[in-house]
Length: 339
Image (cartoon, one colour):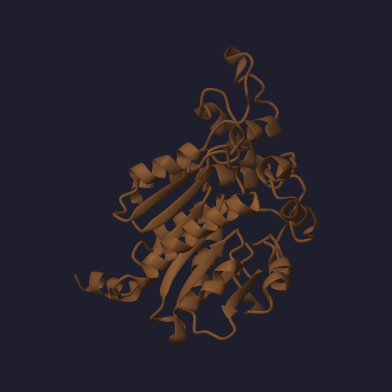
């Protein structure tokens, strides 16, 4: 996450603070918050793997966290032992902020980009009544195979290469005929990951030029010293795959108000996954925005397109913050417990 960059960019009007919390496994997790200097925050926004400091200019307090092994947090670099731990860490920290006396009456929104969208949906599923809404930018809601096969009859022969198995299952590029990972491939990845979970054989690919258009944004990403750029461990690949499959299978359990935004030319997260989320979610309040010609990183598009996306986000948030005050999530939970 680009905390240092954003702090410099918006420091005139924003109070930026950093801290560390210790998770249940003893790791120190880096956390940060952006709050308006001169205003009482209108609502709380919790970001998962994205940048949202611009929201503070509209009166929101924004909170972020680096996952274990990522950014400034401690732990094995780029390693995810259990995706549920990532979800729990986010949920625990975000709720600790919400439960502070000064925040209890404020609305609570989750905000996630890419795999952060998966985290957001899993955080919501842990406690469906707790959150007032979510903004999802190019979320990974559908798992696709990654290889454009020239001979479909031989698709699943080279399973002896663990890196090939992962690339086949998880690297979410443009695919052939919208083909799902074969169950044999999924099982192979899970088996190999169990035998050698920390084996870092999944090759990292520089996709920045294919997912982001803004030159300055790309420069900031590449120069960020806290971004892990090495090979991924098999366990990390297995956990990301499992989490995405779980979300895809349980989209009907999504019940909170949400806005999902996606570029139609995204080659990392399939836009069809966002369509499925919109169609299958049980939420009564749900909005889908598709942007023709835009790529994966919507906030890394041309300036005029970024303004368009950000305007849609702000309009959605403004409408929900200004809506007639309904019972808070805590009050809703209390009623549910009494029933």
